[in-house]
Length: 412
Image 1 (cartoon, rainbow, N blue to C red):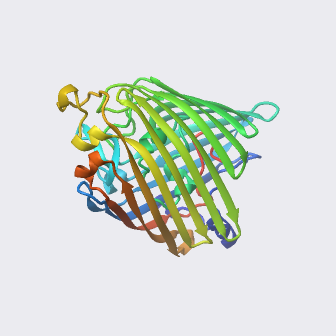
Image 2: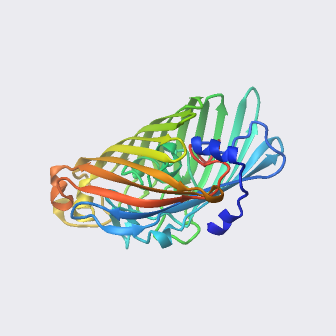
Image 3: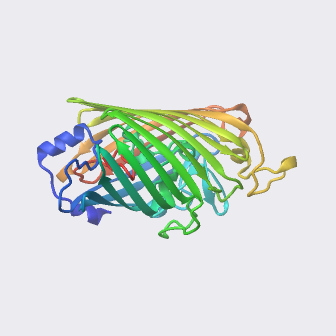
């Protein structure tokens, strides 16, 4: 990642100033260039992580990602190649980083609880072709051995509203966990502010082998999503998907529904971004809802504040016992029966400050604090009023445009 970043060309000072004011532009081509155009972005958060309550841990971890994009005119359309990598398997570890109340994927064959799993080394490798048709209509075709189907809002690491928040939301596995799905094929039609997408892909979550390039299997799941972008400031989406047995630790399929809206405002003195989202997973164990509201505000080039509010229904038995329960209270992995569903709330407030920008690199220091609302049934395991916090150093590599507010089929 560092070697690739060192190849970046220095930008003029005026361009660097403009980007620092509003780092929310992806690659945009109203008139495609005949030659290849390249772009990259990436971030590393070296963080001291202190999670509250009896289940919390204190640790130092470094979540990170790098993304490169190459685009050029091809025939009447535009060809874009995307590659996204992460060294999480080395810098975060097989169990991921500690995050109380988080549930998703597995560790040593059991449900991974109170931790956010690491991302695979290969997070995305996709080819996208956008072809203008007639009367302002464009067709987009995309294929990816690892990529992002048309389901959910923009993935959290690309949302401008979570630009400086290093932690995955608790609602990740209800909203946007499919951003690293396998064997994805997507097509979309867009005209003006409306885009309609459909995807076929493999529904299973990534396995515990984080360094392999993909987990092959049958294409067994689908999704559909509609975007409405009435202006550069506003975007809305609704989506529905069928995931064939996504979790290795439990039986059954998931039917996921999401809706979200995002708003961005750019000023001479900074920018503001807000996202509100709702998601629901319909599973054998019941229906699980998640609500998210997050925002980031930048005061000029250096100071940023952010917040996130979540209110999520959690799998209480899994958080209590680490496995799903069969009838009679017996512990039995790989079986899901209707169990207790409770709400957990989380409020995060934080900020960061850029202190060094040599040759267009961006070094910042920041931190955040999270307080939780805990149901009484989880107080013995997680505490009545746990509080977590992070302190971190953040590095962003030189980039002509930050890759925010983008999806695989819409890199603008």
